[in-house]
Image 1 (tube, rainbow, N blue to C red):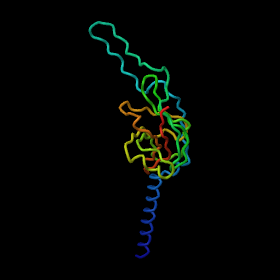
Image 2: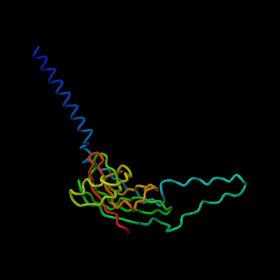
Image 3: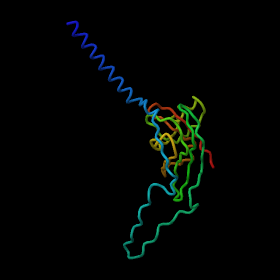
Image 4: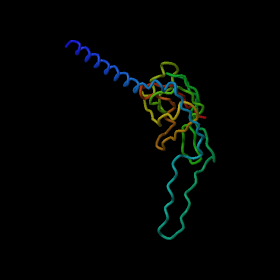
Length: 191
């Protein structure tokens, strides 16, 4: 009887350890640190959403064309900053760019950071602080979670929502939402 009890105990312990290891692997995703995802997007010339088609008048008149936006014909950099490292070594540049149609996009150029679980691109009103003091400040105030990071290397674009005043968010962070820590951040200074 004692022998059967030991076997059951060891089998239960083995199952518990296996479950703990699998859960830890799923939660931490350690392999992500060694897998690079490179994105090489070109700068868009217009926003990602097309304006709705002009409605045809029902009174028999000829439809008029939608007004065209005024301003520079090409993309214009309004603010930019270089990334500094926080939890992981991070390099590259963040830019707020006004596109020809008047929409705005956040462009990351030459990004080079570690991969990780649940990385996000955040705009924040918290100041960028060097070293360990800056690792966890970006969720202290107001922030906008723009999107999941497309890749830990390369050039990529993130459309800014029309209802967000980007100038009230002077910082960009590559934020690990799983562990509430910044991999790296940049201060957006007016160009």
